[in-house]
Length: 181
Image (tube, rainbow, N blue to C red; front, side):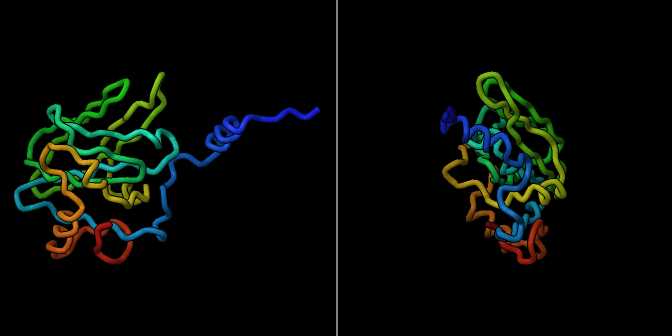
């Protein structure tokens, strides 16, 4: 006699066998990403999250000084313009992670958030990254304005497009054209 496998187990098995760590969309299927130069005398950080299955339903809310800057959904990024100096960014669910960065004037840094296994919920992990890792991740969608918090500095989608347009030669990250998605 053949036993029926519950649908929920079939879905779990399919999710477990799916590739983890790849980009949400192939670079050729997505709009090109351009990162503008930071404003004169300021620094900036591109926070991003890859489009992996692990923790896909969880957001990765990036905070500074207890204020939410923005939540990073799977396959999303945002650009934070900030004053030069030492900054501490936190992410939290059942555990808290802290990333301290020394931001230089006229410099662009990268930081990646990923969700690791936790006991009751996924655990966000915030770490320094590089432009090359950002490109390789295939992350190509800017965070929606409604996912951004009250803390200052994160460029809203329309502000990012204006900054890219105003930058003489934006740092092309993927693709050929200078356009923010």
